[in-house]
Length: 334
Ligand SMILES: NC(=O)c1ccc[n+]([C@@H]2O[C@H](COP(=O)([O-])OP(=O)(O)OC[C@H]3O[C@@H](n4cnc5c(N)ncnc54)[C@H](OP(=O)(O)O)[C@@H]3O)[C@@H](O)[C@H]2O)c1
Image 1 (spheres, rainbow, N blue to C red):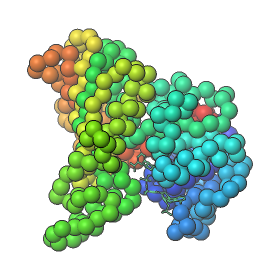
Image 2: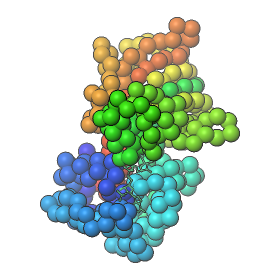
Image 3: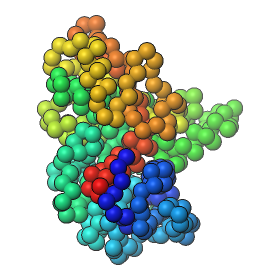
C-alpha cells in the first residue's frame, strides 16, 4: 500500500457494513493519514462511534451538505443510495469511489482495478465518480490481465462459488444463525432465497429474461470494459455456497496463442497482486484476510491446447471491495 501526500478528509457511506468495516480496518492497519472522518449509515446506527486514526467518530445519516469539505467519499451502501448521493459528493468537491453497481457500465465513468487499468486515472483530474467493480469481476480480471497482455484472450467461461459475506452482514449472520441451529430443518432466511447451510444456491441477484442472474450479467459486462476488450466473450454462472468469506472461481480461458505451462505460470506470477500456487491450491477459508488474488490448479484442456483451466480465490471484502477502493484512492492522492 502507498500513503497519501497529505492527510485527507474522508467520508464513508455504509461505514457499519462488512465492506465499511474492512475499509476502516485497512486505513488503521496501514496508518493512513486521516485528518477528518465522517462515517455514514442508516438511522439505526446514528450516533454510534467508530474508531479511526486515534479518535472515535460519530456515525451520521446522509443529509444535504453532509459531504462539504471532504476530499473523498467511499460509497458502500447499495445502488440506490449511490445513485442519489455520489453525484452530490462530487458537487461538494470530493472524489466519490463507488462500490455499488450504479455507475459501473456508464461510458463516462471509470471502472478500475488498479493493477489492471489504473493508468486510466489521472491524478490531476477534477473530482468525479470512479466505480469499484463487482467483487467476482475483480479477482477474475486480475487473473486474466497477464494472460491478455502476453497471449491474447479469445474467450472466458467462469463458474463462481461465492461466500455469504458477499451478501453483506445479513448474509454472514444468516449462515452463522443456521449453523448454530443446524438441527432445525427448513431454515427461513432473508439474505438468500433458500437455506444456505448444507446447501448451494445457483442464484445471486434476480433473473433476467434470458435466464441469467444479475451477478452473472455484472461479470459478463464488466470484464470486457476493465480489460479494454469489447469483443471478449465472457460467460458466467454464479453460485452461493456456505463459505463465510472469500469467493472462489473455476475459470476456463481460451488464449489466442500456444503457450508452455511453465511460461504461463511465470507470466501470472510476475503480475502484481497475484499469488500463484502450483503444488497446492487456495481455499476460501485459507485466503480470508489476505490481500492477493490466489490462483491454483492451472492446467491445460485435453481437447483444446489453447484452453486453460484454473482456480481463482480472493477475499471479496478486501481485494473484492475495500482494498481495491483504497488502491484507487492511492492512485489519486499519493
Ligand atoms: N460484501 C461484499 O463482498 C461486497 C463486495 C463488493 C461490493 N459490495 C457492495 O458494497 C455495498 C455494501 O455492501 P456490504 O456487503 O458492506 O453490505 P452491508 O453489510 O449490508 O452494509 C450496508 C451498509 O449500508 C448502510 N446503509 C443502509 N441504509 C442506509 C441509508 N439509508 N443511509 C446510509 N447508509 C445506509 C448500512 O447501515 P446500517 O448498519 O445502519 O444499516 C451499512 O453500513 C453494496 O453495494 C454491495 O453490493 C459488497
